[in-house]
Amino acid sequence: MAPAVGTDLGYTPPDGGWGWMVVLGAFISMGFSYAFSKAITVFYKEIQEFFGASYSEIAWISSLLLACMYAGGPVSSILVNKYGSRPVVMFGGLLSGIGMILATFSTSIIQLYICVGVIAGFGFSMNLQPSVIVVGKYFLKKRPMANGLAMAGSPVILSTLAPLNQFLFDKYGWRGSFLILGALILNCCVAGAIFRPIGPMTSKNKKDKDTSIQDKDPEKVKMSLVEPVKAATTETKEKESCIARFNKVLDLTLFKHRGFLIYLIGNVLMFIAFYAPIVFLAPYGKHLGVDEYSAAFLLSILAIVDMIARPATGMIANTKWIRPRVQYFFSFSVTFNGFCHLMCPLATSYTGLVVYSVFFGLGFGMVCALLFETLMDLVGAKRFSSAVGLVTIVECVPLLLGPPIGGAIVDTFGDYRYMFFECGAIMVFAGLFLFVGNFYNYRMLRKEAELENQKKDIEMKDGAGLKKHDSDQVSSDEKVKIGSEGPPVKHDSEKCEDVNGSGHQG
Image 1 (cartoon, one colour):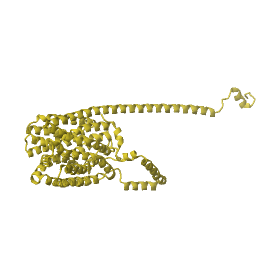
Image 2: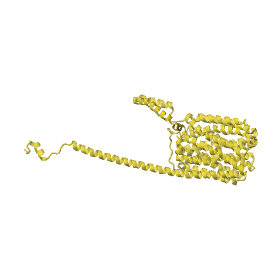
Image 3: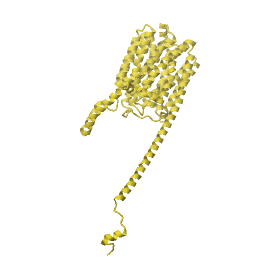
Image 4: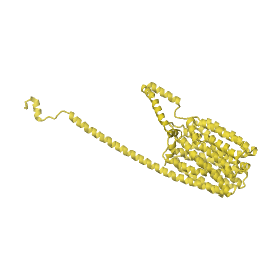
């Protein structure tokens, strides 16, 4: 069982109040960030025919979008640490909207890579990480539930965008659709405005408090004059080390954290196969002879189940039985997801694809609801922004390569089934790795805790023994001192002399 991670933010999160409005803002911004790369797959077949591209080439659009969304994580984390979540999300919404609007003027697949993949993808990275971070600042006890509700934005928006995109394409083509989608994404700016800053104490209040203390105690006035000098000296020393300065904005010491490394390795394996099945779900349906609207509706079915699974998973993870073992719950979710992909090739009709979409949506929702909760459980809220930045920049590599690898398999074999087999096998392996790694980590944490308790007990016993020895020594010294200071013992002859001065009694 993992030790409970308390709050290390310097204040107690409200666990409600305006925090629920923050969850609503995160619901919108994270929803667009995650859902968009899946929703635009509805246009892929038509864009592929328009530009004469292969399956692998068209898959690079989603790959670049996801890779840039994750690669921008460290930049986003640094900006959040410096300016807060609100301005970063508003800038991200503006940038991703501009990227989609520029994509309407693309005349080659390369220009789509740049506009949709790079510009819009980097904008989505400004939406994603700050939204996850700010929810963790408003919630502690109800954090798994809040994360689950915020992450539910992706399936809700996906279930809306998938059929909407098909409707827009029929009315305006893919260029007009991209223009309208760019305008919709600008709503992320409104969502970012909801992210009211929260912290231990504002600088103004802190300054007033320090002034009142100094007025009461003159000694504090002297200390206040000395402290700036000490602070300046410390700051000078910190500037001498580039690594120390960089660790202030992005904590690289996390790479020495055993639980973090297990999480990172497992997620890198998982993300190789995480998004490819979604990218190729609608095209697979069309390949089996399903009409365009029915193929797009598969994504809506997946999203509806995902929408229910995320908050439900968050509530389950928040229970007293699951929360201490949330890492195992996450491992199970990844394995279940992979098992669904292994079963997908058995679906050769539309009914089979609907059943697959239901189970895929359930597994996908479970993974997404626990993805950041398990990370915060490992590293704590204070180091979470740095952890998210480091995780996302590493994960961008498998995200970049996963869909094109799946597309290359389809191009090579001319069949989607082998792509689903590949994704399922990788996901199952990643889930088993996380399970074994977390078991090892929990075991080592227990041993380290036991050794620490034994060490404290020994120190307490040694301290008590030393204290008793010192007490005995003090008692002995006091006896000697009392004996030396007391009156001398007199003999009988001396007593007689004291009576009459001659040694005889009267």
